[in-house]
Length: 179
Image (cartoon, rainbow, N blue to C red):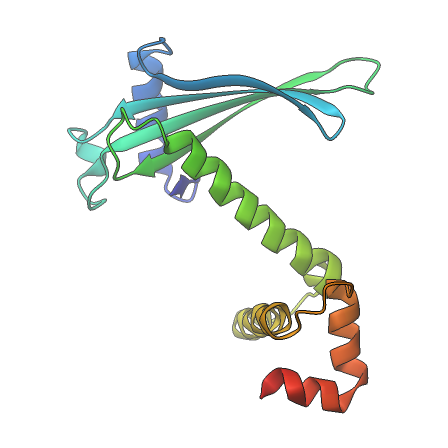
């Protein structure tokens, strides 16, 4: 589970624990460079046992914090600005599990793919609802519509955008999607 600043005490405690223990090879699960999408990126994954930390007692089953350092630069940037970012994840797996980096990368791939589709095809970022309940309801309805179209229409040469438009323009097609 990704840990964000909406849990400030836990976030701070785990960050301090990672810094105090240090970034040694003993804790490093993965260290690699990626070239793609116009940038160079180095990702390092460190895992630490947190089962004895007091701040984790309310998090059932939490055994490990994974600290992910991402260092990247854009290849076409003449100033070659380098950015570094740290993200923390908590897990019920042991800190020696070599698959932890794969779990995190796969989770982000799924999340990014879903959010990209919702933003590009269904304009979710442009949709501003004043009331929180209506925003949640519409968001849920968009995800349901997206899943229905993905599952029901298996036409290989029709893009997702065309499938969504076709369901809006053709009532018979829409009914076939809902039945």
